[in-house]
Length: 161
Image 1 (tube, rainbow, N blue to C red):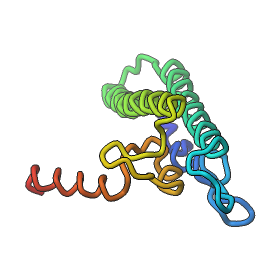
Image 2: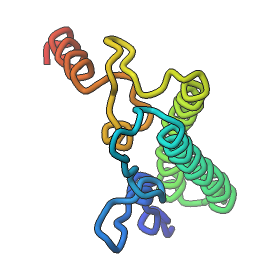
Image 3: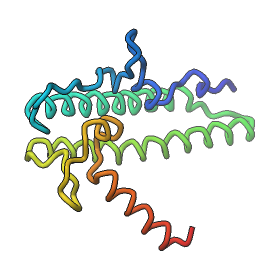
Image 4: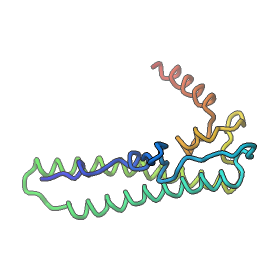
């Protein structure tokens, strides 16, 4: 049985490609270029992040469609138990990946709501600016780097790791 996993490229790899100038594209979009004296999370910045989030969501939805078609195409009743087990394990792995992506799509939708409520780009804990580059790296971020680091340290201490 031929697997199709070798020909797949992870969505995260597809979403970050280099431009001829050497900058990294974010879900097909160039990084935001701030103007001198520009207001943080002004209309242009909000539109930039709206575009990133919509492009990211579109990529994830396309992956869902590919998975459905792949599972329909490959769902033959294989007589060999080993082939059947391999196929079922592959499907199981794909479904777990799609479940994580489903949760991410929900988070993207919540982030788009935050943009509409003018609550995007500021830390939920301390209220400071999260920062353009951090948001481009993780558009659904709700904590500044300091609060996120502190949260991770606390989690590590609680889990004893």
